[in-house]
Length: 162
Image 1 (cartoon, helix red, strand yellow):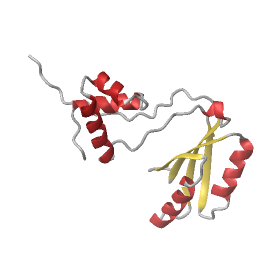
Image 2 (spheres, helix red, strand yellow; image 1 turned 30 degrees about the horizontal axis):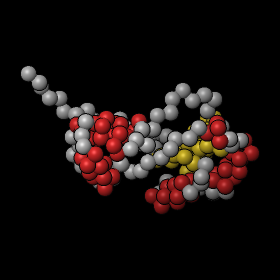
Image 3 (cartoon, helix red, strand yellow; image 1 turned 120 degrees about the vertical axis):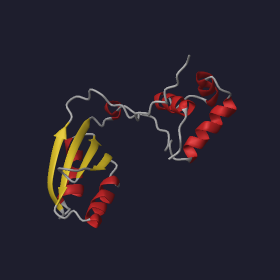
Image 4 (cartoon, one colour; image 1 turned 180 degrees about the vertical axis):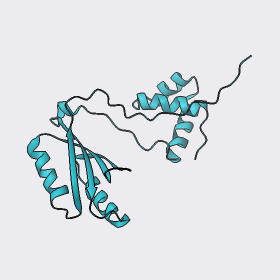
């Protein structure tokens, strides 16, 4: 694990809030030179701390207003069976997130589709046609109170200032 100092943490926090900031703007916000900011960000990217950059889009403006939270329980839970279903799930564009969980169901999925016919098509492809799927329990979102993809960052070590 890459050790993160207070500047790294401030850079990560800023990038999570606005990944579109130019290197110059990032350096200014951090109070460091552009070369330092660029070097630090590249080091965080190379270490895998920063996995990528994305634009967060509004599903409602794109016609994908139906969000489903799905519990999936498999008949056989061997590693190869879990990996097989997981590979099928993550290959679906409608599946935004896929987690193996414990206890309870084997997997939790977050899916986004434009409408109920699209949901039914996904159900057929992903759940109905798989003989290993024992149970599927779906919850449809009626209101999204919060969507925050930022990671919680560790606090920098406390420094006593006298």
